[in-house]
Amino acid sequence: YSNNKHNAKIECFDDSEYKIIKNKNILVSSKTTGYQGYSGIDDWYVVAQTTPHYVKGDGELEDKELKNNYSLLNDTLKQIIEQANDLVDDIADVIINGELIAAKQRVYVLTPILDNLRDISSSLLQTITKSVYNLETVVKEAFIDDAKMASSLAIDLMDRNLYERANDCRWWALTPLFENELSKENPNIGELDKTLTYINNLYTVYTDIFLFNPSGEIITSSNSSNIIGNKLNENYITQTLSNKKSEKYFVSEFEKNKLYDNRATYVYSASINNDDSKTCGIGVVFDSEPEFKAILDDSFPKNKKGFSVFVDSDRKIISTNSKTLNILDRLDIDEKYFTNLNDDVKTEFIVFNNIDYLIAIAPSKGYREYKNSDNYTNMVYAITFLEI
Image (cartoon, rainbow, N blue to C red; front, side, top):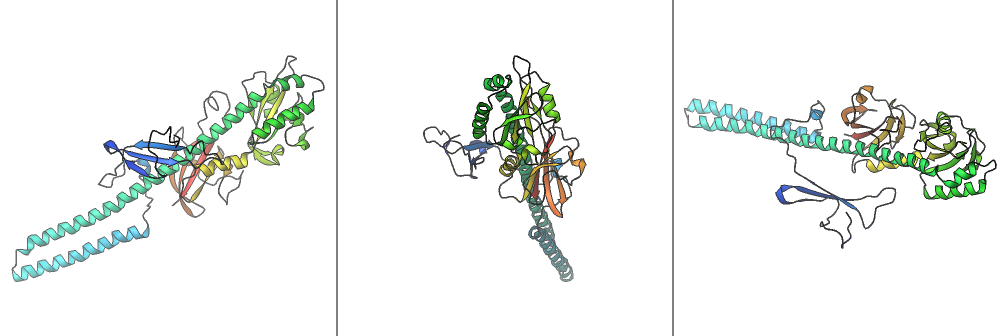
């Protein structure tokens, strides 16, 4: 909702605060940090209401994902338990000495007092231990929730973003100017250039937009005159030129592409048909490096250490905000973490490059018809690495 004083119906409060409202529900508000400089109109907020989640007092972990041998206890908390153990041992020594003295002097009234002291010290140790491990449970749950949310958000943003790329090329392929000029033996290149440049100036997620003729030769480009005359023969170009349906789009493999300065990206294309059945095409070169990295940066949890990656089904890196990993490198984690994912997000505690991480792996689910009913298959995973 907006913070516009004339429209807001929920009292706005500072980012990251929470309020307890009726029925002991928790109301949480967060202000947008924006996306690539855009923060909405009148300061956008999101408000969520939930019921509190309480950890069971016996320290049991109900979530199967939490049932592992990995401990998040730091040295300070471990020392609390150790000191509590030492204290109970000292009290036990005092009790034994007290019992010996009481028996020797026949002061039997001390026996129930010492028994109660033994019970109290044991109960004290149990309470301290449970409290510490309950705290660990809460921390684990928060870590897992943060990692899951980050990976799910990143892959959803990626799917939605690329869905728009598929829409753009199909929509622009229907431009009457393109259909008319490309049906001519000598099209007006100046008019085509002007239109492509106009579109590209509005849609800055593309480094280039180009048109190609029935032989796959690039005849005009919005941003790279040096590619004009190049003949493309990749599979997505061949499919585009043999297609007659306006609802179809085609995508290159994610690999180094001369249209993107020999860097890796996706190129989307669509068919331009005319009355003469002369099929040409339009291609859009997605500026993948900054766009994908922006998604990973914006979806990563605040105040956490770590990094995120997009990888394909072969664990080849599509994008990352890690300073030590490179695009097209193979991510060196076990293949077993990618099995039986379906639509779920899988979490695991692992050691990667000698650092302890909690990772969350979220598979692409597509968006609307994109990757769901349009015959385009390209499995991608978002992986969040939260440093312990």
